[in-house]
Length: 64
Image (cartoon, rainbow, N blue to C red; front, side):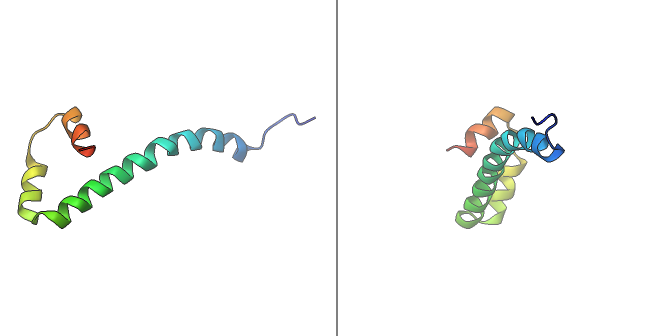
């Protein structure tokens, strides 16, 4: 009978759900930045970054 789980097995149980959230979120941000840099010139990109928007507006903008 196995009494203790190895430390690596315990850590992986906690890391996998966190990575399932973080990896897609980082990828969406990356995709948004690269699509804007390819389609617009850098000046309009900088202007958009300087706009004051709420967190929810920014999050909605990622999915448009």
